[in-house]
Length: 238
Image (cartoon, rainbow, N blue to C red; front, side):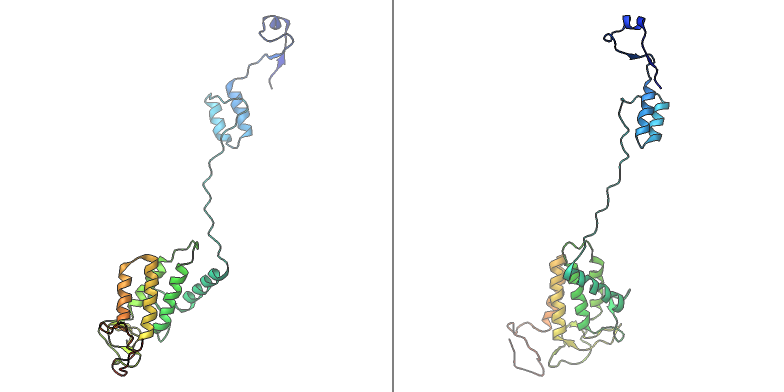
């Protein structure tokens, strides 16, 4: 407590106006520091200033401790994008074989269902403002797709809807699988998704793979026509 009082002698020598009172005990700066620490949350810091004789302005308070910036919340998806993500997660949970890049089948899926898993991955990776990175999943799809690539033309001979050119087999190629027939439509689906993936990542090698897949259906020198069966069916269709 600060004791306040006046005396006649003090009034005569006082520089204050007549009738004004002034404290007889002048508080030290350390006492102001203790007063401000009572109003601040940083009591320990204020006590350190008091014990060291540090001064603080009357009525001031210590600055609040800085807070770490809050992490931005992940965007919440709605409608079709949300349903697509749920479907993708279910596909990965029930059909994907971790570490293989492939999906369940006999023992692995045929190329056509695999091409649809590739399409699903490219589609969810294209969802705007999802806040989710699918780079690892996209790379895993390419690893799995490579398991179907057959450069040695193993499997069945060319037929109405098949090719003997280097392309993707209808089943996993050797050594992991038996390989087999290269279907035009399966390779078309794969090529389309490789182009879509190129639009997302701009990896030039994807275009080369897409072209090679299409070449199994549009061989050079055929003037852009589709030869559905170069051995069994000689009439081209546009």
